[in-house]
Length: 288
Ligand SMILES: CN(C)C(=N)NCCC[C@H](N)C(=O)O
Image (cartoon, rainbow, N blue to C red):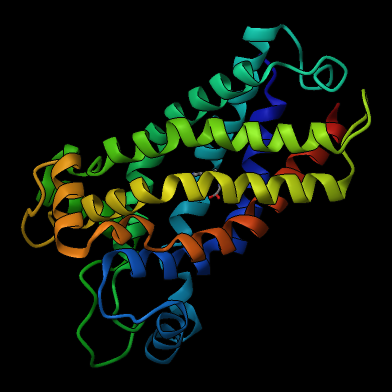
């Protein structure tokens, strides 16, 4: 089993993650709290109340976890394609796989990465939702003092299953949308690259950026539900499950609730995934 894809997936994911984390914090706040009037209002309030550090809350854990999560996504994707089409990463430019195979490999990668991502994503969302300024003497300390304390508190108060709160919504979000992610990327690269050649850096950047946007637009409805399920249970349980969360969110806030954070998600997705795919492609070419 080729391991380069796993390592390239890890490094490229980490680069994308640092770039996108401030956007991600604004998105999570908009999806789960009603105190902000929009993206700009949310950014101004975070900056005034919590300083620049507020945008980077909850980042250390995803950085540690991206090694597992992104390498599982890219490694499983590439190795599933290898199983389905018997072509390695290097051979795929000359013999492109069918879109059905790309979609199936993307869905498989998305499904398995969601399982690894669930506890890390839960901790990230809980930390991002703490609105207290970072470490101010004399002020009330936030409920969670950091990722390890957060994980330990969830485990103590909600048990092992508590660490997987929102995992179903996460799997439903990631399985089909990772298929869309890889189809968009490969489709755009194929469209703008002469037969048998590697795509240029500009093509990889644009295809990666649009793959990110397409997958996040499709993922946003379940992303909202996932974030709400992850915040549920903090004080008391409100939702019985994914469906109940969907129905009560629509009843209270209308259908527009499913598109909360779609603008910020898309703005974040372009640079993050452009950088992710560019570094992934170049690392593999370098090692190949
Ligand atoms: C849930 N969806 C749509 C995705 N995860 N899409 C793929 C993008 C992955 C990248 N690490 C990112 O965070 O944008």
